[in-house]
Image 1: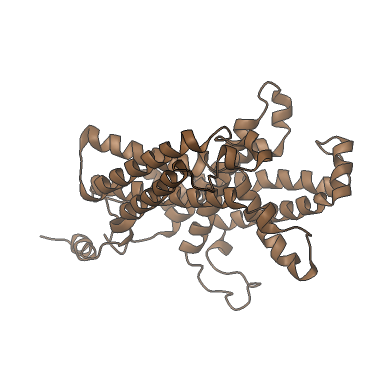
Image 2 (image 1 turned 180 degrees about the horizontal axis):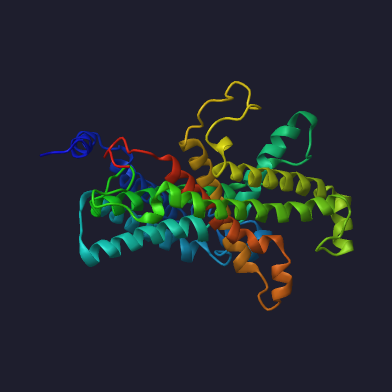
Length: 360
């Protein structure tokens, strides 16, 4: 006889989520369009954003700092076409065994490349300084052109690549769930879920991750605040004098304040005020925080931090471990991973019964 749970699950399966249906098509469309840009650049079009077309001061720290339009643009065009074909396979075919693993590995590799390797820390700088510029806009501070300094075309291109990477991550996740006979909405299956995904387990390991993601930016903020107070913490005195003369030290202090605020907000992923709006939030106090809001925002910040952390690890002078370990930027990869893990734990704690499959 069919049980109530089985009957509820059957009823829920009548409604399937929409995003897994179009995720692969969206990733394929992005790849096709960006591949078209590669073809345009290969044929002499203007605006090649990597290497020779990038900002001179940033080429040394960019993974594609040595790229040229003549050599790299045709590769971009070919990879864009290949990505479109791969996405079509993911949307239309249901492979098993080794072919499934190969397709899945390629999809996640594309996502990781576009999110972690192609962008660099300039995205984090652009995102971090945006609220500073908006707040100082009525007062004419800082006296710089934000779009020229923080968001020129090469950086905007990185954001486009980051968005493409997130689309590919969604496509890979949808394909992974569909070919594993799991729910497209939550990833759970009738055979049961791993114990680490239970709310109680996620609450334990998520707490460690959240506090790690709180401490790392606080370390960065303390160093920047010390510089604002003319304290040469982990910096030579002459370099500190130059920062004060140019006024950049105050922009750094403002960025540090935003980083520290973000670290404090991370604690909401493991505390009640991350589930119910606190009293000081006027108009929303006492209401339930929509689970998707912290998850989406924290996921985007995690993606930005991953690219910045990858650059910090790539450009660090590993022949001098003492200088690396004393630099706040050396811990950005840990910050990114910790925030991502804390976000996943928050999602697992709050997802509840799936409205598509009915599983808990």
